Length: 253
Image (cartoon, rainbow, N blue to C red; front, side):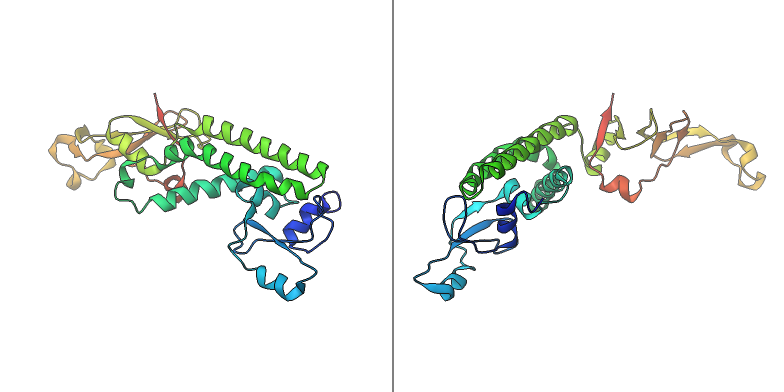
């Protein structure tokens, strides 16, 4: 792919050349390794020392950022993987930045992100259009095509996951008396529900006589119960690490 898209590879590698698409001489630099590419122009009259000094100048204008900057940084990798990783990076970034807020516990940060993100990314794409003049026509078109595919991915992801929540929200929903499940569970018909405290009968054959009291009636403490894929009810369900960290919890009607 590097040979087919030579100029994109030169941007990614930070190589100084004098045959950019717009005729300029210089190199692109990602100063903070944050997928924000600035162009450092090489001035023959001022020489290499001036060029090297400018290579760490954060005041230089940014020519590529957001998805396009990330795409260039990972050029040559699987595009579907790039789309997934970049979107998750932006989502996790938003959640981490807002978690310290005092009211974050009662906010659905994922839904907030879904509502705002496309506007932000459109702004970054518009800002990054200036890098296209440095590329060949073919490279500009492939960048545009990949960006279009990325927005299709984002739209589909948000559509399929807009009603999903994290485990913290799932617990709140359970306390409201509703059923929840994970989209990632393989078994069909599985869900969780909070069983409130009640009195239940206990099978005498399950206990020794010395352990048996109250005529077989015991107070059952509140617990989360799971309806299994085979139709049984499992009291005292325990969440795995994957369950607690997943963001695909949904309400079961």
